[in-house]
Every structure is written in structure tokens, then in C-alpha cells.
Length: 490
Image 1 (cartoon, rainbow, N blue to C red):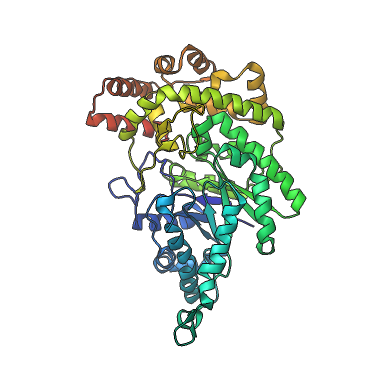
Image 2 (cartoon, rainbow, N blue to C red):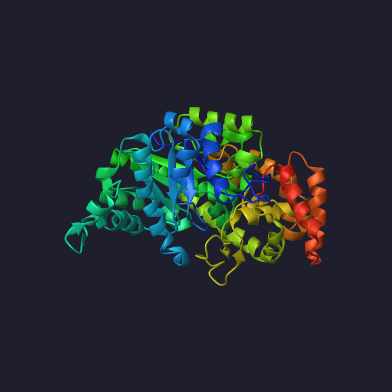
């Protein structure tokens, strides 16, 4: 069976981990983190991220050499897994050569692990392709690995020597590509894209893994829109599974804040109920470091013991109409907020050493209302900035929902109101009224169950200073302290 708990490097933690340097996790610290999540937290997969950051290409060697006792008992590639996320060459053009570096890591890791275990072991067999929009991208990557990375074995060197006889064979001979769907059109057609890729490479597939994003859809369409899109895609993938007769194992990229999934140790059961057909859930940084280790371990254990069931049934036409309605209102509300968000963003602490990435909403692929561009930071920083001024992003587009919409949302999203209540504990009603309007303020009061007064006081000060254009060092401290009160960054 595929893994259940995928540790990732998403920097949504308020509390720096013990492996950090001056609060920032980088380099050797990420190798230490991978060992920690396998051994101490019980995760059975680590995403190793080449997208938007430097990634250690010697990770397999360093893991096996630094923790021999663990990896002799738990074989890397059979019991615990290392999965690469690579840049998408068609979108992240300035980073596309990193794809070669990542794929080369697969074959060098094979040699290292086979020597270590004294048997042929492939510690890395899967790669995640972000921002997938077509089956062609998956097929190109599959073919590139087979024909170029492995295919070079057949190249004849001067003097009549084959590359494989000089350098040794490049193994494994094939990899599985996991599409990561992150935008509206791709998630609507996820089943079609997967089916086309499966037809190309079916002979190598005992099962199919498909990755659905939660953060960037939320950044582009709002919390409710993102959840509805995921449920729509999961329902379609469930139908495809039955049609193909091959298991499809979804992955969902849930983060710490309710805006990005509300996947935290106390709420693991909620998220399992929200997405019952999902096989793999992402254990992001806040889950790992903003809670006691025993609590994080208990959350992972709960996840590992859970058995997936059928996806939540949604009415497809009704769901898509509601997503479009929410999307339009979300864009209208976000546009006036952009300047304020971008003013607060520099005060949000960095938790990972990664390339700064700003774009039109998530990835510079969609216009706001088709007319102009709004540039925002990535989803974690965006959410952190809004929380820091007391305007939880979960409120965005909520005032577009009628009573019938809310009733339907509660039917298909069993913890919709619980997630809202968790978020609105950190709302500053005055700031909500000023920035989003009186209807949002009324909804804030309607769904809020409690108020954190310490957090509210900090948001008043942060908002006043940002609005006045003041750049005080303690603004950064208050942004960080408020995140620690919440138990997540964004």
C-alpha cells in the first residue's frame, strides 16, 4: 500500500524546529528533519523538494550513514519512502534544469542504497510534478527518464564502449509520476488527465497516486471553494478507479490553518472525515513543531490506523456553480486587500530557506476577473498576513453564500462550521468590518464561538502600524507572537 503520512517542507510553523539555524531550516537541518519524522513521528514518507529551493542531492547517503540502526530495520524504498517534488519545466522555466538534477538523484540513490543493503534497492521511485495541467506533461517526464536518464546506458562511447559498461547501469529503469493538480481547470479534469497518463504507462502501475492541492486553490478561490473543488475531483477519481479496475490513491496537501486544511494533531479525525477517500495526507511543519512531539506522534498514529472509504458524494452541477460564485466574490474582496497583505508580508518570519515566490494569486496563471493582475505572496504568507491584522482569510467570499448554499456546504463539508469557528477565534471584528465590510463582520459574529483577546490586541497594533507605514522591529515580533498564540503561521 502507498504511504499514509507524507512529511513535507511547507514552512507553516510558528515555532522554529530544533534543527533550524536562527529560526530557518536549511541544508543539513532538512536531512536531520527527515530522520526525525521517520523515526520519532512515525511518518512513512518524506517529500524531498527541488521546487523553489536548494535540495541536498546526497540525502539518501546522508540518511543511511547517519541513522544506520533505523534504516537497517526500516528499508528506505520498501518500508519508508522518499518522494521528490521537482519543478514543472513548462511553468518554472528559470528552474527547469533542476529537473535533470533531481532525476539524477534517483539513479545515484539507487547505487548508494544497493551498496548499503547489499541488494538491489530503489529508495526513490516516484516524483511529484507540480502545476500539472495535461497528461502530456506526465508522459514527457516519464519518457525523459526512460529515454534520457536510463537511455544513456545504450550510448556508444569512442572506442566502442557502452556508457553502462563504463559507469554502470542507471536504475531503476522507470519511475512513477504523481500529478499535482493546483488550479480550477486541472482539478475539474483530473480524472481525464490521469486516465490518459495511465493508458500510456499502465504496465508499470500496480496503483496510481494523484496529488490534490489545498493551499493554492484556497489562495485563488477561498477556503470553501478549495474544499468543494477537492471533493469534486475526489468523486471523479473514485469513479475512474472503478472504471479502470486499478486502485487510485489520492494525496491531499492539507496545512495547518483552517484556510489551508486545519490539519493539526487535535483535528486529525476531522480531516479524515472531510476527505474519507484520501490515502495520503501531508504532515507539514506546523503539525511537527507547533505541538509537543508526543501529540504530533499521536496524530500520525491516528492517521496511520485509519482506513480510507468512498469519497464524499457531491452534486456536481451544484458544486461547480457554487465554486464559481465563491470565486467571483473572492476575487472582488482580495483585490482591495492586496496592498495591505503585501505590506504585512515582509514581517512574516521565514521558516525555510527557499526562493521567494510571488505571483498573480498562486502562480501567475489567472487574472482577477480577467482584467488585471493582483500579485500576492504564497498561501502561507498570505494567510499569516491576514491573521496578523485580525482578518482570517476563511471569511473571504463567505458573504456570497446564501442560506441554501450554507446548508449544502454543511452537508458535504461536515466540519465547515467547526473550521470557521477555529479561525474566527482570532478575528478582530473592527478590522474585519473596515477591510471586508459589515456583512463579513456579521458573519464573523455569527460563526465565532470564542475570542482570543491577547491575539486581538496584537492585531490592532499591527494593523495600525502597517496602515501608518511604520516599520518597527517589534512589528515582526508581534506577527511572530500572534502566530505562536494561534499555533500556526499561516
